[in-house]
Every structure is written in C-alpha cells, then in structure tokens.
Image (cartoon, rainbow, N blue to C red; front, side):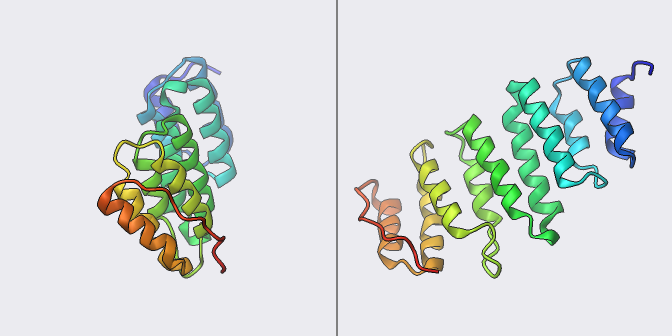
Length: 186
C-alpha cells in the first residue's frame, strides 16, 4: 500500500465505514509518528466503530504517544458518554475518565465529567464508584470544592446524611477529618 498523506488519513478516519480501511490508516498514522490529537478525534467520532474498536485505538494511541494520553482518554470518555449513552455505556465513559485522571490526577475535568455522566434512574455508572473516584480526586486537585459539591449530591442519592453534611461543611469551611463511613445501602 502506498503511503497515505495526513489529509488522506484524516479523511479515512472521518468518512470510512470499513474497519480495514480505518485500521490501515491508523497503522500508517502510527508509522508516521503522527501525534496530533485532533487527527485522532476524527477517528474517535467515526460512528461505524464499535466501543471495543474505539478502546483498541485509544489504548494504542495512549501507549504510543504518552504526551497525548490524557487527551485521548478524555475524548474517549466524552465519546462514550455522548455517542453510546443510548446503550447505557456510561461505565466505559467512567473508565476512560479514570484513565485520564491517572495520567493527570491534579486535573479537575475528568472528575467533573465523570460525575456529570451519572444517570440516577439507572444508577449508571454506579454511584458508589463515582463517590470513590471523586473522593480520590479531591486529594489531588488544587481546588476540591466542585468535587465536594458533587459528593454532597451523590451522598444525598444514597441517603447518607452524615457524609452529605460532612462534604457540605468541607466545601464551605475547608478540611476536616471525615466521620467513619458505613457503606451506603442501596
């Protein structure tokens, strides 16, 4: 196969409906060491790709181009949240927001994005997973108040008044040691 130009790769990522064509273009992008996240955004928004295929591409991009791993994970989280929401695939969105946070734990965005994809009627992603993720995030970000506000909401959902009050106070006053938490009953 002849070498594709960057524009040809971009068009295949955006317009192709054939996995093999997309995969060939992806391999060429890797061979050419193209580390432009905007190029891969076109790939992530290709609606013919399955979640498994998107994961395959995203994981490979993050491994090959570590400087854009955070952006790749964030985009995958957003794609899964928006595009696959009709399949209740918020767990994949959460998984990729967690991966983004593991790359840049002090960034607030992955935590807030994960919290915003919560669907209360279906409890997806599981509220307990979100609570743990936000609590871990609050230890790393410089301004944790937005995370405390989300935690107040989630503790209200699970009916844990003590933890809800704790995080409300923490958001208003600063830090204090948390009370011993009993796992929320669902």
